[in-house]
Length: 297
Length: 297
Image 1: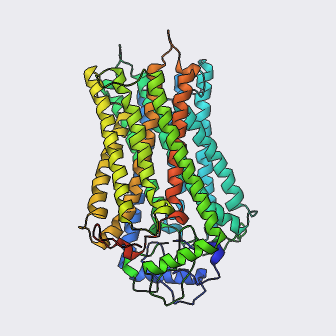
Image 2: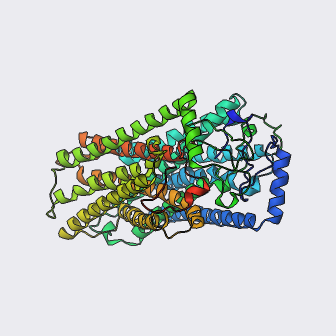
Image 3: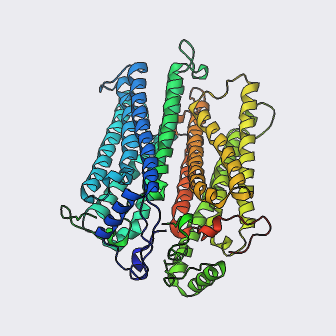
């Protein structure tokens, strides 16, 4: 378990290196400086086959994540462009088509990739600041795409005199986006800007991580209910195909849903695996180091 | 972070007590026997106000979980009985009404409550076996209710010549139930029966926990898409109310969806808070102690 910032003066916990076997420094050693951590990590990486095994298993999961990311984006783009007629921004159903593409790309794929960024070992042992900025930047892009995706559907509804925000899908989707916006502002204020004291950072970090996971799952639930709803809307039977006959569009939409769920599970696996956590959870890492002056760990 | 079973011979990690501030035993102390753990925990509980604060925050979260559990069950029962005409088992739409009630009660509420059982401090410092059996029993009941809930909808569909398993909702729901059945059998074989060696238990426990969380979120996504779909089916407008006018049934169904999401988030919060974990994650707890002979921790 992680040491709490408040007890750093007591006997320190064993230095536990991600992607390496658990090790304990000599007891009584109070120091766990960045240089020492880096040295031990480098030694482990060079000599220990289990480090390579952990590294390999992480990168296989990460490769799976990237494959699922690409598959989700391709699948939703093909659905909107090939089966639903393509894109426009004119209040027509072609404008609606931006909605699934932007929500899946922004609120799901970019969001999930931004969330796991710190788990990529390539980002360790380097100045954390650029990765922090990339984390915030990816999530800001994700938030902007989500908001544009919401605008697409609101515009379309308003043009067609369809009421907004009545379905459960819309309630979950709007809650996910609103919580995401709050989470981004909260993250900026507490973890990037130099206002929050270390004790507050330590206290709020688990909440930030939990809320991040929760928003991802709200996003997955919104995507699943939205795809399901859309397929019932457009595959009504009569002169066209019926959803219950599972025409190719239904198989594509359902497969997109399965890919989305698989993506969510892989993100959750990467986030929850303690062996893959960035080694920056010690108390000193919660202390703010000013932008552009942050030291290497 | 948690020590790995393989390094128990090195300097032990600090004894970290859930619901208590992190403490370190004297360095060089190899012993972390059950009696010692119990003694330190009792001392902490009696003397440290922060233990009480942690305990209070856990029980407030747990009270919220129980309130949400009851609210979900009441809400889905009221919907099915008051708005949808009640229950029967005769292939009519009244048989369908068992489906949402049993899935929400079984695959969501009982499942979530079974998952967080070990986090309740009342279960600590006692023989673990009865709680292990209760965990397995609650989840078995949850699985049985889910399967009966699936039978209800399959029977109804077969009677009305409606195809089964074509919608994304049904794909996600059936995947959740199938994975849940696999997870239960896997849990029985690895963690309850005396066949698996401690190393395998240690290796598979994180997978069990991750999969458990994943199944919960599949269940949430299935519930949300199912409620959304049902409300579009039954509130079609024409001579009756339309979903887009948000009649009282729509508000009730959407509120049930919001309660379900809140329930999922609270379960996730309880499971992810490391301060609330049962103190049984040390290597010796992964060693099997035979049924009915398990010692107190």
